Length: 356
Image 1 (cartoon, rainbow, N blue to C red):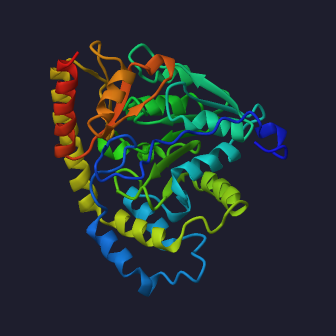
Image 2 (image 1 turned 90 degrees about the vertical axis):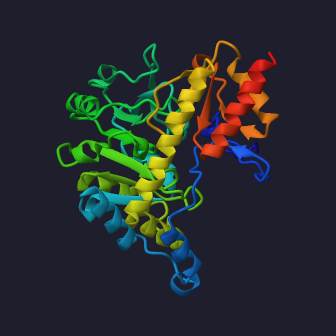
């Protein structure tokens, strides 16, 4: 750290992203919830001929009309109810900047996406982490009359457990004067989206990403949906920060991905089917598996600690995610890959347990 950094950032602890190994050919990479399947063929075709259409010497559209309209059409919204960002992380950053009340209070689950406390520190907000219950579930009543902006990942990460639409509605009903943000990075793997509630609640923002279900983690495209007034607020922040926040290639790729609905349903269905088979196998090996509606599962065992299991899998060239946080230190999070990936992990697990 240099002597020039602002005093307010001296103690900032940055977000730790999942490991991105430089060599992945020999690895089964199940640590960062990436989609195991390629993007839509329409995306691949559009990007392949992008030299003809992208014209990279020019700035991109600050408001990429085709992409925004595709998102709006898919979700039954108007274009002014959608804003796009450089990944959902940037969209969330804009939200943490824009929607702080006089107390600058942001309320979020204690065990959830670990960027939330980082954003609180970065944007000088008063973060209020709310514990999960004994079953690692978000309890809606814990968020009633929160007195600040609420941010909930649904399904939650790293647990994979989802709130129902009625539970989300109860949080909204009991926070009419607070913005409620539902971060739906994993919603397409079995949970119910809160998008259908947007026209009922002027305090609801739904955030989604192209990184998971649409296989575009490398393109960095996310979006927010909500009342037009909330979206206008976010665009005010965006245009005060980086109006050209999406590059031309990402806009092309994301537009095609959003329009290819059949491919979305095909690949997410495959992942969900693989997940259910994998869960059955892991339970047969004696693992506790939290009920997941995401493209990952959160598992633990009384036969091996989370850290030991994480380390042992590395010897089989399998990478999963381990968190040292006290309440979940016995768990590992495992991304759902292909059937072949998951069977390789099952076989490795059998060998690991048999050697104990």
